[in-house]
Length: 310
Image 1 (tube, one colour):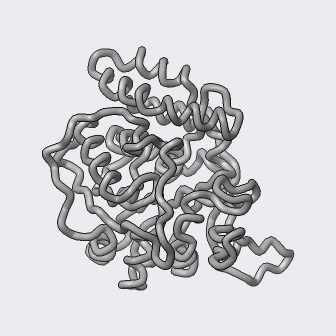
Image 2: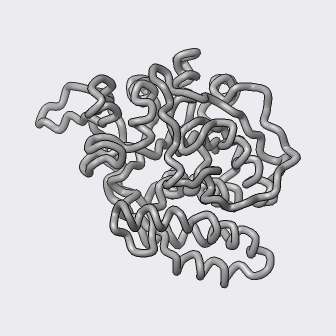
Image 3: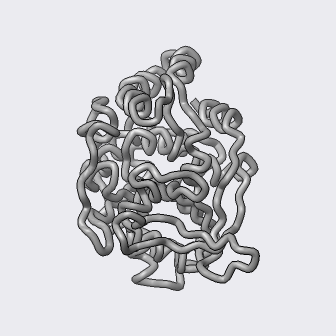
């Protein structure tokens, strides 16, 4: 697996899970702008790998600092905090990011290892879109591509129509939809049903013992602002969605989500609809590209899977 992340709070938990899970061989992490700028996302990723005991083991490739065709409006610090990880402080890593751009790495590794790699994107889709623009032939060379983002049958979370990752670079999302990738979208339809609670974090702190304490303490420090945000915006009580961890888990435990393939395109014009997933659900659909959308989830099983590795 390769993860592409704009390493904020839920990305951090997704990365920690991927490092610890026996189901995953984590080959690399690419970084992108989104929750925070790409430089901060890269630094957070390197520090997380140190926390997880994988410093120097998993290479990190910095990627895009802006969308394909529009300006990056900047991150909102009330969601992920000024440093993207809720103000939690992690020791710096001695590991450095690789010199190769994430998009170039994706194009190269897809050609070197066709049919072997699963790519999970937990932020904007810009890096993979750039790779596909460089070499469209790589679309058929990934084993699977799982994207966290979008909203099909539920409202968006940035605009009434669009979720943050799709809204942040709709042109990149459309590149992916049109490319012919083996693509699954894990969006708000299922992530808003899959919640992490303060009680879950307390349980993790108890079960981890001394060895697991640094990770448990980091998550407690990290998620406070996230719980507060979702309490204000979604009226969730001491809980928040597991957006990015769900995408990673769905990639290796696909039986935990129920998906439906629909013809779909991404709206890229009007600001009111930019990033909207337009699905053709007519009796005889003809507009768009076939994409699998996760529409149902076994949320309790996902939470158990997540905490089974710590």
